[in-house]
Length: 198
Image (spheres, rainbow, N blue to C red):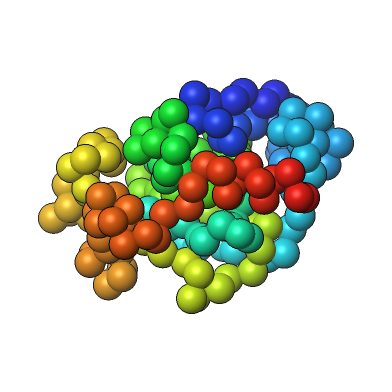
């Protein structure tokens, strides 16, 4: 497995080594020792999610209160998605920055997203199937959304808001500035303190 850190601290793209023959393909998509060696800590798995999306479905930007936050280990098992990570940690040198990675069944890449970061994706094909391992279970009172089309973020989803299929919550999510004004965003200091306690 190859681990590549992205410019936003706490984000890694993982590319597995695929072994194929006339029977099909085999690859390891998570291996604890390799993960810990490259990321610096282990991944506690408390919940595993799967979503199947029609082309043009946009899920996100989602994030959780820190502590405890929710780290995610994400991949696409069918179809393809544009997976987006946003730095929502107030005080971070890359606050408000985003990065995107295409996840599909060719490269079989994965993305690790640390606590305090926002996450979303848009399905590029029908029946795009995304699975993610989560470090904490779903907590409705501690989970939030940011407008994926916030002009301040300027995320290039490849489609406009009028073309994207959004949930009711995502469609009315606050902007980054509004969430910050309301005190809803995690701080870099809180995220660092939480990681040191793990």
